[in-house]
Image (cartoon, rainbow over all chains, first blue to last red; front, side, top):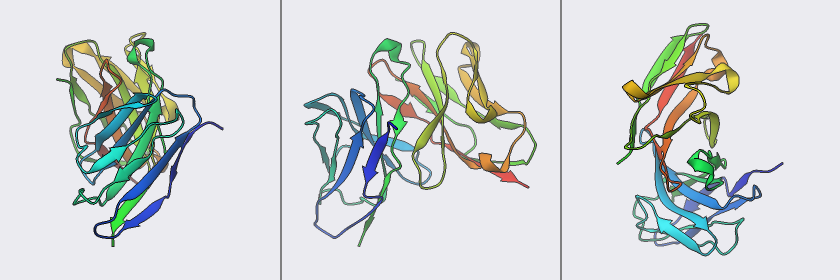
Amino acid sequence: DGGITQSPKYLFRKEGQNVTLSCEQNLNHDAMYWYRQDPGQGLRLIYYSQIVNDFQKGDIAEGYSVSREKKESFPLTVTSAQKNPTAFYLCASSRTGQGGNQPQHFGDGTRLSIL
Amino acid sequence: AQSVTQLGSHVSVSEGALVLLRCNYSSSVPPYLFWYVQYPNQGLQLLLKYTSAATLVKGINGFEAEFKKSETSFHLTKPSAHMSDAAEYFCAVKTSYDKVIFGPGTSLSVIP
């Protein structure tokens, strides 16, 4: 079955440490997204990519970095510069074009906590 | 700029009662609208989407939504709530550049 796989499901970060969250999709989608979800705040866009080797900052990109070297993969690194990284992180993908009514497909998320 | 508001961060209904979750949007162009559902510790699942083919859109699990341009609304309804409907519901609007703006979400509780 096609879908999006996020790993790990739970992740703990020590002070001053960078951690990388994995996101892989086999839906052959061009666009991929990273969101941060905090209680009561809905989803906030961190980064998105519409094509391999290209990505754009979202609304809260500071303290995060991404790469898009392959169509299937869009890893997110939470750097030590992100002072409040505790949150639920969601990866999504979608087709592009066709009038813009393509929905996003989501992974099951990674919950990141500080030790 | 496009935005989405969801009236009521928490809604409680009795099992078997009507579910009504409100969504209003602002958009300078005809919008692409979506409703998603999220169960605890999971990602979002698409319930339904507005494609401009019809103003009343039917989705999964018995949900439907009506697009009302004059009211800039896209409210989600279900005639009879089931215990399994308890979840977080998000309304979303998509821009022309494949960015999606999500509302803050409404948590639905179903009382037996």
